[in-house]
Every structure is written in C-alpha cells, then in structure tokens.
Image (cartoon, rainbow, N blue to C red):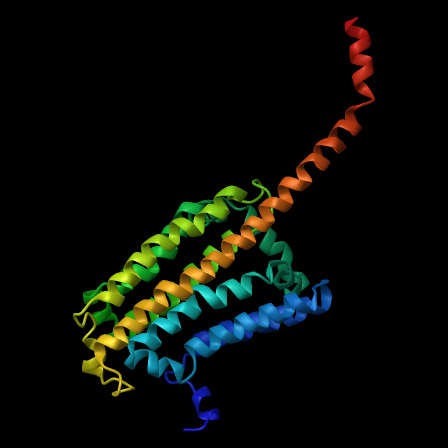
Length: 290
C-alpha cells in the first residue's frame, strides 16, 4: 500500500469535508484582512490537517480494527489537534473572514436571548470540563464501545463528540483574558487539567493492566494487525490514553500558567494607571475634608 493511498477516505463524509472547507476558506480570507503571525497561521493549518487526517483518511479504517490505533485517533481528536488549533487563537481571524453583509446579522444573533442562554449553558466551564472527560470515558465502557463500533451512526457521534468537546475545552483552557470577559478565572484554568486528567489516567491504567480482553469487538470485526495479541493491543491503547494525553494536558496547564503570570504582572500597571487618572481629584477631596 502506497503512502498516497493512506490519504483515501475510508468512509467519505460530505458533511465533514464541508465543515473543513468552510473553515479553511473563512480563515484564508480572514488572514488576508486581519494581522496574524506566521506562527499562528501554521498552528491553525496544522490543527485542521490533523483533524482531517484523523477522521477522513485510511487511518479511520485502522481505528475501527485496532484498539491502540483507535486510541491514537481519539488522542488526536481530543487533545493534540484541538490544542494546536486553539493555540492559534483563530476566532478573530475567522470573524474577519466572514462577508461584511453577514456581520450585523451575527452580532444581532449574539445579542439575542436564545444565543446568550445557549452560551451561558454550553460554554459554562463546569459543563465543558465534564463533557471533555465524559466524551472519552463513556465511550470506553466495554458495552458502549461494542455497540458504537457496530452502528455507524453511534460511531460518527462518538468521533464528533470527542472532537467538539476537545475544541471547547482547549478554547476554555487557552483563553488569555481576565475573568470577565473570560468565563473562567486564570487560576482555575491552570488547575483544570489536573482535575480532568485524573479520571483519564485512572481509566488508562485500568485498561493497561487488565489481563482480560475488554474489547472483543475488534477481534469480531477483524484486527488490522493480527501479529499483535489482543491483550498487548489493549495495553498499548491504555498507555496512549494514560501517558501522551497527560503530557499534552500538562503542556496546556503550563500555557495557562504563563497567561496567569502575565495577567498578574500586568495588574499593578493597570492599578497605577487608574490611580494616576484619579490622582488629580484626590487632593481636592483631602482639602475639602480638612
């Protein structure tokens, strides 16, 4: 099999291709209009390519027929691709790529009660963190995994839920603003990976050290690499969920820590500016009090 043939989609998805194309066009348009560094552009395109490779190439076939490849796929969808893409801070560039006629309608929708309610619910830090963990752990329940691998609709839902929850979580974690306008305090953004990685490490360790074949569905469907015993395949998958995922979340925590330190260093400057701006009124008040 040639390397080029690995790029052939295993199960073509017009909806996914449409999402990728629209996102790519908006970003390309926005990058011509808004100032954005080469590093940020490289991060965005790398993240988008990783999403495409994980979901719309021959890799998806191996993910359906080998547990450790399945875990690699979800590591990319849940951790690596969203982390890299959100590190590019693409929001302003994507907005700049929108046609000018659409922007007033978007602003009106953002101010609507339904949009504010949806944002307050779906972008709540607790909801995002829970979805980030549940989207991984739930699908690893053996009975749930068995059904999801046999039903293409559940399989698609599984992959999309992992990707969307990953995007939401890394968007929250890498937010470099104060709270408000950010919905999450800087200190909580640093602490969040410690909380979310703990259940994933525990589940990964259980899978790694289990001597029982927890996922016989891969044998039933036919394993892609028959030379790898099922228990070893399972152990490799557990290690992927355990070690690389924890490393990526630690990197995210360090990036959040850097933002928190930057914000804490800028706080005295902000306070001094406020004092200077109100300093002229202070002597007057003191004189009147005398």
